[in-house]
Length: 188
Image (cartoon, rainbow, N blue to C red):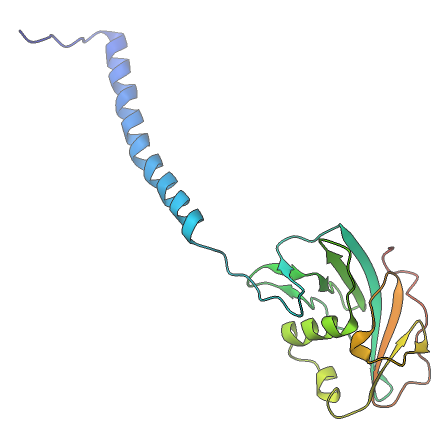
């Protein structure tokens, strides 16, 4: 004996809902499976660390300070480029970077530690290849000044500290070496 199909109003609604759920399930389940597989096996491209400085998607506020850098080649000021240490592919920021051409070096790291001018220069050299600064580093004498005072150590070893004015001089020095962090610079 076969069972007679229920053709009531409520049964027709149930059949329609069940049919719609099967269509939705046929679309949603494969999308979820593909998403899970992609998340497990496809890793985003990452930028290589430079001198132990990583490039991360987000900026850190755990250790967040600013220093100011001036660069002179044979007495003439050179602009520190914007977006040193900021990558677009992959999208990330090195812990040492610049946002604008104002010479402010942003130091934003996951933990407090010592960062040096040499590390920043290496990040600059590897993320901004179009600078005359690096041509002079091998052929002319290089000296560094911190808050207007010439340092005896190698310029690469100069530590970057909060609200510090650093000048790197390649070749002959200008008549006036900056000695103060800019008053309009960010605090910290």
